[in-house]
Length: 233
Image (cartoon, rainbow, N blue to C red; front, side, top):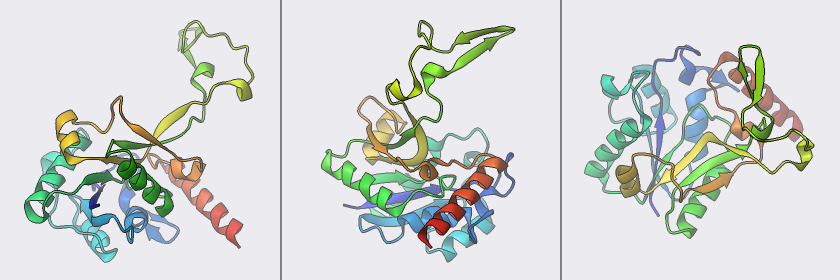
């Protein structure tokens, strides 16, 4: 099976300036996703889509394919991820032929493990190439969430009584942004990685669910990495 791993790494970032090149454990953030895909037998290429020359250089130093700089229209805050994916996929197919799957690895999920990537690809293969999306246990259960209307507090899910203990609530999961795998034809047809037929790739390790969107997230990732290193010593 030939899987194209795509890592979208835009140069601009409002909340965390220079995010994709920020250091985590002595490596640029971008490098963690490249290394998670590097050496996985089913991954035929690791393609980085970026509009930034410095990111392109860092990606090439890690062994990724960076054949062009992303068009400016696909590098704005409002550019859709699916359009970035299809732009890269169109180029790759014209140069190398069609892969069996497109694996989106966002660089903002640096602590996903190579073993998780392999497990997700195996699930894709064994279940007739149905889309696979990464999920993690929800930090806050939806039955214990509220909305505030002025001075009134209401359950976010109406009609639910808060009588259950947290350990008695049914498991709840969230999309963690760390893994998306889909067949190219499916992505072109539906223009999303999601759908009723999506297979969940559950990641129980909370470190894999860390999504770098703020400075605080980066601090949490640094702490999680330090904890992991200490645990192995």
